[in-house]
Length: 334
Image (cartoon, rainbow, N blue to C red; front, side, top):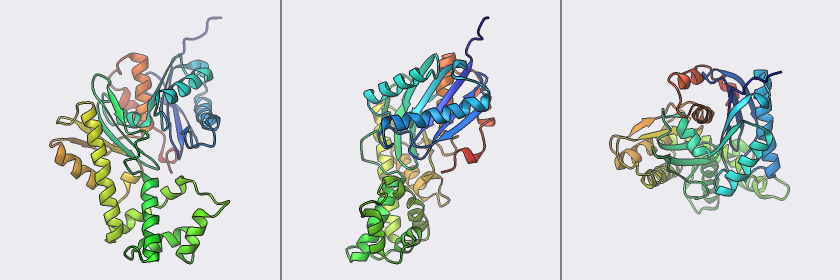
């Protein structure tokens, strides 16, 4: 019996809040989707725990497609934590061991999100969710991404700064701020010292992911004119734009025409304040930059990377078909 040649494409976007896997035909029709938890090898309980989340998401997507790993021609993985060569090697060896494609590619999630928002993967990208991923890629496939450079702010860092502002206000080391009310409500606490205890006492969940949930409180306060919150948002947004400019210069894209792709839950906050700071700062340095603020979900970038592997050049219409057949928002909710 002759076995059918593997022909399905696999794309995975792995992060700290969730891991999303999609299976699609070469024409771009998504036929299966799956979701699991945290797959960042740096922030999961163990490396194996992170890999298990990838397996869970992929297995769910394959089951939904009525397929098995033997049907996968290529697999592309856009991963938080794919920062150093040894990280990429670990992830590549694992995905090959799992049988997730005859060809496998591992890329940092900054570059995967950038691919989602561009027709060719060339440009600069800022993805601001629980974490922060900033990167750039030129037409010669030269890339730079922020990785472990702790110089930019995602949701976790914004939440941490909001919490610090509340502590400082409570101790008289900083100005009063409406952030205090928001933080007390979030923790269902009666006073700031109770919040401190919940965040620092032995046996409590002190993981930084919890602080990311404070970012919307910060952005809400800034939108309502709180000066302390506004100062935090402006400073962090300007720094993120500056790091994006570093990425652009590193690959020779610090002049127009260039695309800046903005994505992630923090940048989708209704106020638009954080995004506006970034837009303005980057555009001042690179006049004529094209801002892409309506990029599809980052996992689309992983799917396009898979198509790049399969075709060595994505045919017309594949990207549009992927976006048309993308599952509903519940798959991506945080």
